[in-house]
Each structure stands twice: as structure tokens, then as C-alpha cells.
Image 1 (cartoon, rainbow, N blue to C red):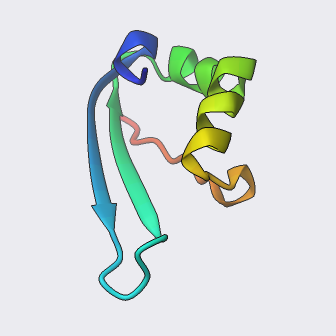
Image 2: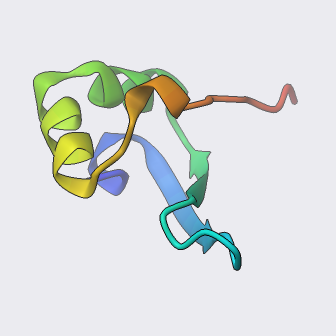
Amino acid sequence: MFRQHGAAHVHTFRSDDEANLTGLVVAAHDIDALRSMLQSEEGAAAAAEDGVRLDTLIIMSEEQ
């Protein structure tokens, strides 16, 4: 789903102490497309299915 919406690569990682604490590092070709997907009904449904709490989502970008 991420690749279909602008992501080039997704790396997942998980806390050793808390199995439910998971993070993603997403390299995006098109950050606007990725943000749109995350804010869409499709993105919200996928997040809910995966147990993602959207209030904990933090998006950072690197200026180049």
C-alpha cells in the first residue's frame, strides 16, 4: 500500500521492551501522495486494521 502511494522503501522496527510499540521509516518519492493516502478513508481503514493509533503518528521529513 505504501509503494502504491509514493513510498520507495519502508523499514519497520519494534521495541524490545514493548511488542506493540512499532515504528516505520519510510523513504518517499512523493511525500504529498503518501500524506494523502494516510489521511484517506483507505489509509484510516488500514491503520485501524493494523491497530495504529493515528494520534501517535509523527511525520518528519529531511530537507535536501
